[in-house]
Length: 261
Image (cartoon, rainbow, N blue to C red; front, side, top):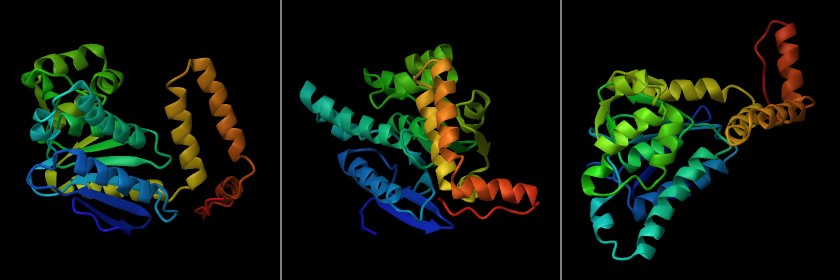
């Protein structure tokens, strides 16, 4: 496993905990995004990892946003496109991953941090965390996907309210509007997220991947096309060892033993 300056990885029960550790606020700049991208590539290629949890190091932040100093140093549209392209490539990789990725939001989650979170497949949040898209306060707008993913998650009206006012909301409110799956006390965030991940990791990899693909690809099509996609994904699993084992275990009233084949 590669050694990195800003990213730490631990693996237990087929769940990888990926921690961005760039004190004090874990901001996203070219260096941290590059390390996150490389770490994700490593974990997605590791057959011993079924689920990935992303969290922030330290006491204050999950990810407090993009690095303002690096943003301020951008002098041309080309440099801006390169920086935004790095962020969007990272969020697209997370969203399109063939393994479930869960965000464990342990503190401030603003700007680029919230954009990264929205690309994750599930989100567990500290109920007192602060979430928002504050870019309007800087005279700019979200650039890592916030204007596109936020309306798809919470609806156009609420998304525009958050983007156009730069308002912050608590983790508890984020759960109420469906921005996160669940809000829990601060000391339970990582434990809850990894517990969810370990539960998911007990199931067969083929079915997990098929479910992710069916949902992600289906959301970009019409309902009719999505239904056909679902059938194709289901049929592709029918003859697998895991499908046979799952059906047999149900009939025999025992826990299945999936082998990812």
